[in-house]
Length: 281
Image 1 (tube, rainbow, N blue to C red):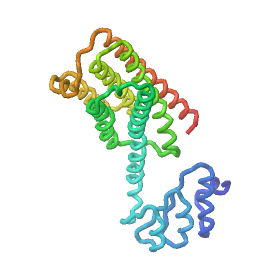
Image 2 (image 1 turned 45 degrees about the vertical axis):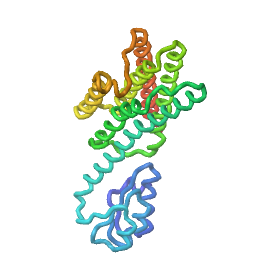
Image 3 (image 1 turned 180 degrees about the vertical axis):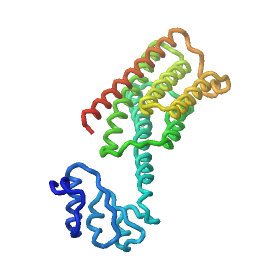
Image 4 (image 1 turned 90 degrees about the horizontal axis):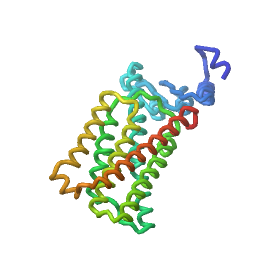
């Protein structure tokens, strides 16, 4: 590794030495790409994190490479790297949305079953909230530019955020359902309150996942907020989704629960950011 660090150009290198140079870089924690067109480049191309073959290369070289430059132009590589970063970084971002939803739905279904409580949502209510806080925003977030470099540990990072966030949201909705049921709240009012709480907290998960904001993300977020406002206020949609007016006491519980949910998500996000900042990946 000392030779590789000290020298800029190394010539007359055998195929095995090329492979060893790649291994030395990888042992230092670097991601290595190798370009080549001949049979003598094959060991290094196979060992590299990504092997790039030229269109004029041998068939064997192109067969083992992960990428082939069909026009033989190195100028295409920056655009290819940017596209790869966009795809990987955005997939990681939206996976946190979907995994959080999976966790809170599973937790809520489990605890409601254990305590013999009715599930606090109608399928149509849950579908609308999921669509406006996960499905539609994930579609647009996946298309936005993102130049963050890929880091190993994608699934671990996603679960580190999604599992505690989902558990917190699921237990929060369960607590609200328990309190409302014990207080004798009407089933339709209970479902309306639970849907409001979930919509607010799920929107905040979207806020956390979307940071840092830019004008395009703000437009997406504002559109989702507007959609939820329409859902909860338009009479035709309210009737279809079985939403009813809440009493002042019920509103107070909904607001308090929503604030608690937002605070819990922020605590998880802050812990997640601190762990990433200290290098725990």
